[in-house]
Length: 167
Length: 44
Image (cartoon, rainbow over all chains, first blue to last red; front, top):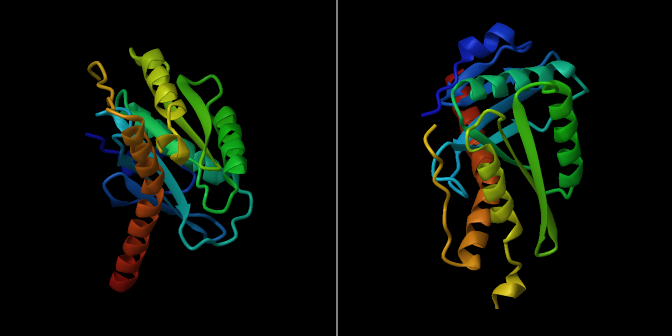
């Protein structure tokens, strides 16, 4: 059972998080932008230990570049991985067709914040019904099933058929 | 973590449904966050 602690996160997070409910937190930046971050149990390709990660600028306010946001998220993710061999799944929001940019930004953030750390980021992209989806998983490098999990995720994503293939 | 149990799908259609459900979780979560925001405003 995943139980993230705001107290532990706030030891290192530049923006202090407030627990809203289990595994969901908010923080407010110096520009007054409120972010909610959270994890939700996902059962798409693993029956246990898989959580989808979400972050939202809840009021969709303009958010100036702020490294403290990325550092706060990094601390939240680190707290997640302190809780055991769970796996993070993320999918870049595709509602406004900017998912490729989000994927690039996510990978830049990851490479900046987690360089030389013991966490793997593995990405996939797939076109389904003319929409590109960018998804990825993060897991600890010392996960005993590390390569198997990556392989299963790859197979799960790449074998998704288009609508016309189901006819 | 014990040995992970991976989900097996009986058909490509099932796997597609699972993927689209996974994609749809974001919208569900955002709707839930909106409810949380409203609740906080009411209690403020």
